Image (tube, rainbow, N blue to C red; front, side, top):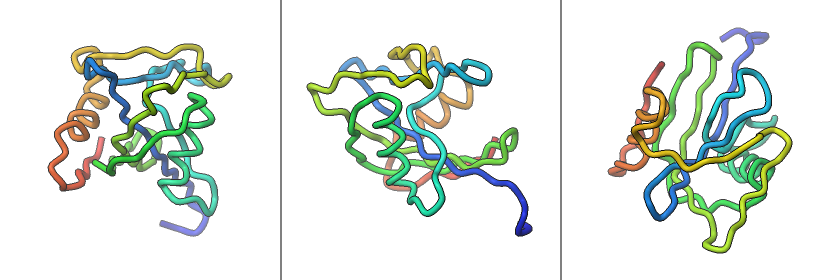
Length: 134
């Protein structure tokens, strides 16, 4: 990469409920897509720090990081996304920021192809971090 090239990195949380459904948030920006909690790294921030900050900003809850399950390059946005398995405290109450209009618990069958691959990699984690490109 050249010095002035633009490149992104983000960290995202796979959070499941008791029924093994996955938490997704509906964005109020861009294409209003459903996505995992998380977002872009700030300058000088680690992938773990970004994940904790972004989740607190977006859902008003602190997440407990269990493990990093994968790193995924998304050519459409020239970005690498770091995917972590996380948990919320049992008494946590989700409070959305203005960046999101709704949250919902999804089954695997309801996910897009890319989301399903990333989340299945996470839920079937065997100690090897996945690396894929889309």
